[in-house]
Length: 496
Image 1 (cartoon, rainbow, N blue to C red):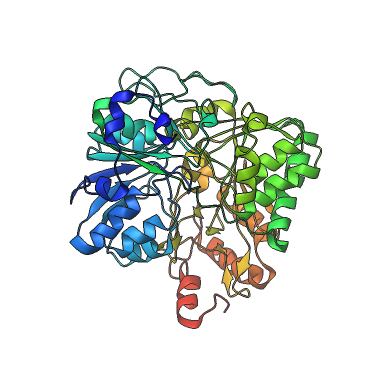
Image 2: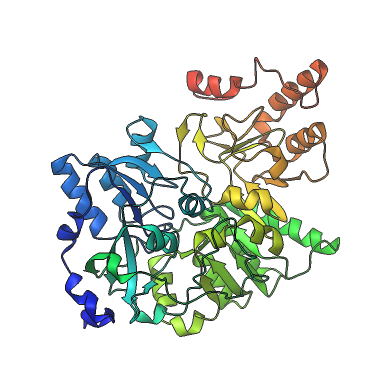
């Protein structure tokens, strides 16, 4: 029965075990793999290569859509199989290797990787490993639970290994909108004017002569880690929903809002679930990842359509959606990430972007990637694609953590991912600061008044007041700007 998923007869002799396919990956190769936030990733070939690399001392450059599931990044890192990784990761073992300088990491906007490959500003992909539901009669492929960069890998890789995942129903055919923009300088307008517009084909084009191996798997995606909302995430969600309600009263938005983008994690889920009991209706999403909350809102009749590049949900939600796909198939679509994250569409559609910060400073600069300026956490992901181009750019974080030893609102961030020019709204569990139309000194006071934990308000106010006495358009005391981080490193707390 599994062989029926290969509908092009000439490819049926390419079937092989994962271990044999892994032998096709040579030392020093650039490897592209499907996978976006644990969804639709390689579940057999890359783990088999990790096991081989542990024995043979092999290294590759690995490019994906985003993070991988099933600890694959960790297995590759532990085996010493990675010389370079891009554009995103969430694995603790790999993170430690990156921060130790053992693996080079390129932290890219998720919209850019495919563009750089097409313009030949990255090394060419030697071999791609792509998970599919089936191979169509013309050799084109049907992706599973994500699209990511698979369209680009299929087009540009010299060789392709396909993993046919029989755990994914062939009914996923039709939930993808596969569109590849033309190369520069001949690029045309991407004709999407609403999240539900479908402009491409249902399969990814692939030259069958590139296929050097086909591996059968039968394994579901790693389930998403769904953390229960706590008092802080609930407070953040309440502040944001109150803000939206006020924007409606002011006539800036309607009860339908504008298309929503939300980053992954418990804060995003808490915010989205807050819509369930609100007066908002007929909502839409134009995002990167669809989480449990997306389908909960669809079931509640609050969300009418969602566009993204992957579905990353809990095990229960996975069964609910893909076990009854007919119910949901007209409610969402999956696109390549250089379409889901393309800046022009984000600006055109007027996206409301909600993303998570590690820390932000009193002028609104946001650090979303590094701890104490040096150590990467996960990566910028798509937050920059959306923040720079959104109708509303919202960043959220807790005001303080580790029994309030760490303040997440600081005199100066230790690493800048999103400058103050890209940030409209900042939210902590303490409150919300609307920074639109404010000069730097006004922004600083608004943030101090609304977002800072009580344990740090006087301390940050003192810094700002003394900096203003010294002067400047954006007043700072450079000798003190990073003193909070230094104090944390030395004394275990940012408090004086």
